[in-house]
Structures are given as structure tokens and as C-alpha cells.
Length: 166
Length: 262
Image 1 (cartoon, rainbow over the protein chains, first blue to last red):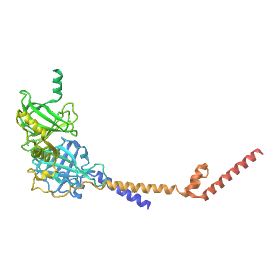
Image 2 (image 1 turned 45 degrees about the vertical axis):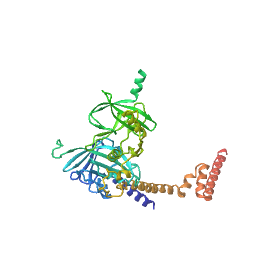
Image 3 (image 1 turned 30 degrees about the horizontal axis):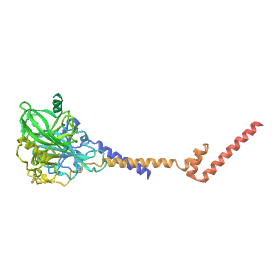
């Protein structure tokens, strides 16, 4: 019994720690990416926000504009893995959304905490925006009761073939 | 006179604009302006924006005190960012010497637009609270101030039902999901559970090692206090054994002493 507890505990703790420290598993070169230079964060964007996708990077939230398209692009990520640095995000931070066909610079203009039922943050707006979503409080173990939202507004679009040309 | 000027300066700030700026009453062209408090109550300020050169009033509006707003980089004003074709809008004035910011109160539709765009509460005028004001003997500016006195305001925000019903609501848009995504991985729980099991396993081993088999040998030559502790764990049998050992040792010591004396 004692040996079983030690073995099972070791496996669980190792598994959890490995997941906690694991880098994003999708190939960044081929995927759309979200990048926040000040936080040294660069993640591939997965096509949906399923549990499997969120293990591999930031997940695109269903029903919102896709990366590279006009509108409100919403991305979700685990607060204890890939979106962990979001706890340090600040108003004015640059956020880059890069696809093979476009490079868009957004600038954070607001961070806030909302209820999980507040889907209004996903609504399209008059300007192109990027909404980053993760759980809140950041130190919570298990399913956190609230969501942390960082909203960034589009500032510039660059052509990847010629980055100096807007 | 000097004191009066100082008092005026304490309630006024200079606003320099390089881009047009929306205020609740009008859009200000680029230029230099003086912003001052025309009148105040506990729950409101009536703010005037004057042309810095001609001293003509360009805008008069209601501002609500807000203790939650904080100055950024020492700036005396904060702004709602420009959105689409709309210019940036004045959000708040941090009146010199006052602890609370004066947050500009917008007409309801404009406030709803700002709230939706910025996902933040915006104070809005309740148009139904406007009272008829008699015009006799009052200047246009006085009438404006009186009207602002009479108005009530409330804070509107993006989640408000009013926003859904208002002209700015996007009726065609429906969320694809009823809740925001679940963004907690199981890693934290796994680590916690694993750590608990590991600790439990290791601690139980230590308890086993501290149990009956090891105790008697360890305590044979120790003090009576330790004997008591072991006794508590193992019962009277151990106590008797230890007493027997102690007495035997005493007898041996007495025998040795007797032999020495002889």
C-alpha cells in the first residue's frame, strides 16, 4: 500500500510537472502565432478551444474572427501553462498576430476580470481587436471561477513579404 | 488677488491637443485649452473647457467623481481611445489637489458606444431626469450649468441589457458558446494529488519504522522519561522488561562497588 502510494504519487506529480513545463507541441513555423515580445511569449494558434488544442498552444475561440481576418479575434489559453505569462501583461503591450499571409500589430488597451458567462467580450466591435482569455485567479488550483481578459486594438498590418510596407 | 489666482490655478489644468478630442458636449479641434471646474457638488462637477487664448467656453459638461481611476505617468487627463472614424474621447480629469478623478458623463448612446468599445463602465446621463429650466434673466451658459445640475447619471457597461436593446447592439451576432472556454489544465491538481500521495507514502514508512520493534533496544540505557514514552506505545510488558534491566544494572554496580571496597 505504502509502495503503491509512493509510486502513484511520483507518477502523478511527474506527469503534472511535465505538463506544466511542456513547450507548445505544434510546429510554430507552419501555424498562425501569437507573440507578445515583452513577455517573451510566442505560441502557435490551434484551430479551436478544445482541451486537446489548449494543451498544444493558444486556442481560437469558436464564433470569433479567425486570425488574419477583420473583427474580434479571441484566443484562449491555459493560465498554468501557455498563457501563464499573461498575469504580467500590461496596458500598452504589443501583441503580434502572425499568419503566413499577414502580420498584425495589436496594442493592449485593457485588462479585466469577467464571469465565465460574460460572452459579450467575444462580440465583434467597430475596430479590429484581439481578445486573450485565460482563467482567473492565476494561483487557483483546478477550475478557476473567473476569466482574465486582455483586449488589444489593431494598430498596424504589415505585409509579411515586405515587412516595411503597411 | 494673488490668493484668488492661486485658487483658480488649483482647480484648472491645461489641455494641449494635437488630434481632435470628443467631450460630452462637442468635439474639440487641436489646440490649447484650459479646463476648469465651473461648479461642484459632492456627487458631481460641472467642467468647462475654455480656449486658452480667447477664454471662450468651448464645452461644458457633467463629470462624476470616481476614486477608482488612477493617474498614468502623472498625466492630468485620461482618454478613451479613438475607434474607427470616431476621435479619442475625454475619459477623466484628475483635478489638481483632489483625490478622486472627475469622469466625463456622456449622453446615453455615446456612453453605450464607449462602454461597448472599451468593455468598461461609462457614466451616462439619464435624459428622463432633465427638468425644465426657466429662461428669464439667464445666459445660455447659465442655462447649460442649470441643466447639468438637474441631470442624474448612471454607469452603463457592455454587459448591460440596455446595450443589447440599444441602437448600437449588434443584433445579428450571437455567441457560439454560452460560456467562455475552460482554461485550467489538470496539471496543478495532478501535482497536488501526486505530492500528497508521495508525502503520505513516505510519512507512513517513517511511522512504521518508529513502531514497537525498534523501541526497546533504543531505550534500554536511556533516562526514565524515555522509558515512559515507550511505555505509552507498548504497554506494561515493556515497562517490566526495562525495570528488570535497570535493577540488574544497579545490582551489578553495587556488586562492583562491594568488590572494590574489599
